[in-house]
Length: 228
Image (spheres, rainbow, N blue to C red):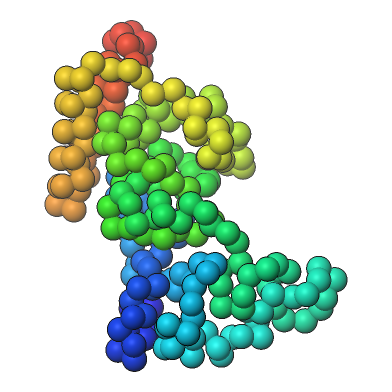
């Protein structure tokens, strides 16, 4: 919580270095995330915990539960067996350097196009996937009506019509090669949505989103008849 973060930083200002804003799948909304103010202590492998005494003291209360078990058959508290230390994140997370950078984030399971631009450097849980790009044109395509139609034909379908947005399949998503002036127009329209999303009411947002989708249709080369 923000209160716990503040207390740890008050005890040792260096704590701020490894306390990161935390984003879960339920906070992914269309265009921008709706962050609830939670944080994660990101002690990746190789962290010198002695350099962060307040963090070490905070985590020590759960040391038994955090310590990796010696074998898969071992019973009792502890995390899965591995070479990580008790205070470290158990998986390698080699891509962690992408977290602080601007990126597109999306839920693993979605019922409609719900891609968001993260410019706050959120660290994510396993229900969130990232595209290491802040391209507003790409964001428009992914959130467009046509983009969702494409995803429905690419991705596995789950219960109640949800789609499983697997990263390996998302990487195959066909992005239209639009002329630069059209790309710029689409990116500008998306930036307007990002800038005004908090003040626009339902009808205004629907109108602007429809406009973006119509521009994306043109980028895909669709005719008015195709759009019906």
